[in-house]
Amino acid sequence: MASGIATQRNDAASYLKTALAILILGLGVCFIVFFMSAQRAARRDFISYWSAGQQLVHHQDPYDAGAILRIEKSAGFQGNRAFFMRNAPNAFLLAYPLGFLSARAGVILWTLAIVAALMLSIRLIWTMHGRPDDRLHLAGYLFAPAVACLLAAQTAIFILLGVTLFLYFHKTRPVAAGAALLLLTFKPHLFVPFGIVLLAWIVLKRAWPILISASCAVALALLFAYLADPHCWQQYFHMAKREHLASELLPTTSLLFRLLIDRGAFWLQFVPAFAAGVWAVRYFFTHRRDWNWHSHGLLLLLVSVLVAPYAWFSDEAILLPAILAGLYTLRDRGRSAVPFGIIAGIALIEVFFTHDMATFHFIWTAPAWLLWYLHATRRTRSHTA
Image (cartoon, rainbow, N blue to C red; front, side):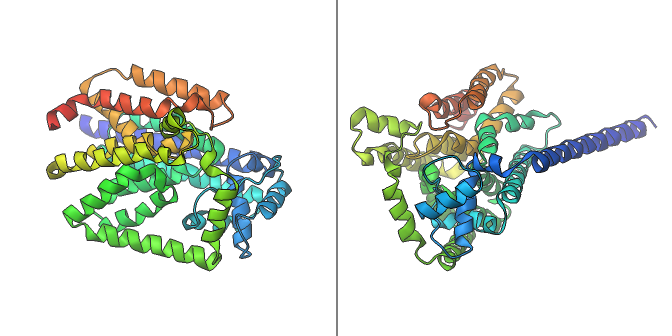
């Protein structure tokens, strides 16, 4: 009798929480729909994808400076230089559908897609950790790089979803895991050591379904890009050279390494990634017998972002699986999460009070996430060694 009453109460509490979550989600959707305007869209990174999509649906150059600036200004863009989509043509899958929408309708759907991708990623991470009863996973919604992505309407959340889907499916559904890797190719520079080890792991474990699925997904994306714009790759490289993307000053340790040695030697920016790739291969073969993407792979992910030759602060959103894993480890050991709260709090304050994500105020965050993760998981790593 007592157990039946307790079960009913638990069910009622569960239904109440679900209803509350749906209500909050509904309010958020209403806010986006009713308060998002074309003027607001023009002030977010979304405008670069929307303008590229407008060009693509008419089979025009999505990197044409004059046309892009004209399209963006029609939506209220205030800049004097065209704001280009920086992704290579294999990411046209993201931009193309926006070509059929107005700026307002496009930014609403784009924002909802980003929110949905973040929610699904956090849900999958929570599931991978055994669906604990606490609400620790909700900290993911306050992770500063993820918040920065939402505010800027950036694409790193989609890449986070790709990482999370791979971690979730690589054992049970290798074809789905391989297909999810397509999202990582939208910003491959964030995954140099990670990608090297992934390829070595596939060969060593003979995980051919993952490789075949990923290859097919990438091939389809490239075919789609070619059909949308047969000259896309020439146009992309011409834009990158014309806009001097290589000389941009972004808050990365790789750029700092280059500036300390020789500002004009762009190749130096790739040295940290190369060195980390060598370390990653050694790390993988040291742990190849007990390799676990949910532990070893997360450390690899943190290192990959740290040494990325080109990255924005918002790109660090892809580290969310490692961040939540570290928090769960601290909880299981009864240790304090105050150090993380301090780091995350400072980063979140910077997000709300710094309008330029390219500022060097964010150069400390990638090393901080890595050092904190090493601190949070140090006993696990010692035991494994």
